[in-house]
Length: 345
Ligand code: ATP
Ligand code: MG
Ligand code: FE
Image (cartoon, rainbow, N blue to C red):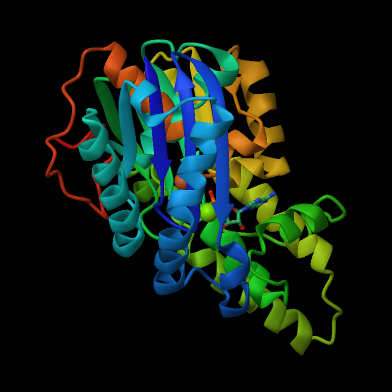
């Protein structure tokens, strides 16, 4: 099927066209620069940017694919999870297009789109695959029985997302938002053993009760305390060491729990997605763990990891191919959409 995918959950307005598992176009506009000076995404600014970018981005995606709206078999749009005002713009726009061109519409789960998109680079998602989705807003382990019909949450962060945790520590160290990439760069120069960064839910009863869950909310405080005590002792802070210890700890716990989940669910493939999968330390830790355990670890190229329209179109294509019923024309957005739900009814 030929599917137009539309994405507007956060700060990217994006549209793409896929035909089966071939990408015909992929257009992304981001309002990131407008948020940088506030140190985080401002929902009202992001929503307004979506209204301005929606028509140009969708038009460009169709033009790049050399297609008209009438050539499309179905429209897919992220219905959640995400910022309500942002979702409303993308979903309203997509519904208007579907209505005017008389096309079926699928209100899909953005997070599961991050899994689906890997098919463009690695081919089919094998049955019973494990997926780690990590970004500024999400940190979850999913078991994918079938990408179109069966996805279950295995673990999730109980508080901050991994990217959020990096951004908080980055702010403490004086890096501009988003700070994740700065931490990555400095971490490559530092000593990961210079200080201890807590891993969260890895010891004792908490570890047993939450084998595949994460907790990153204590990290920023732990780093802040360490810095305070070093300063009090008159020691100079080595920023590279702080970054290295943080990156090592986070990459380690993410990769360890993901591989453990894959083993316990007998999954031969692990898929990684979301903006934080850009992180070098995580990529390295997962690649190494994959080699050691004989698990096929699939981390797509960067432009498929961050939010885009191709992920939405690809999941839509899977749903059409599997014969899943389209969403009802009046489906709602769901800003906290359950990750066990692939598509709105
Ligand atoms: P979502 O709506 O899917 O949560 P998001 O906008 O919050 O999306 P992304 O844009 O997918 O997240 O990813 C951005 C996050 O990833 C930020 O927290 C950023 O700091 C972090 N990040 C990006 N590159 C790196 C890197 N190389 N190392 C560490 N963190 C990174
Ligand atoms: Mg983003
Ligand atoms: Fe995302």
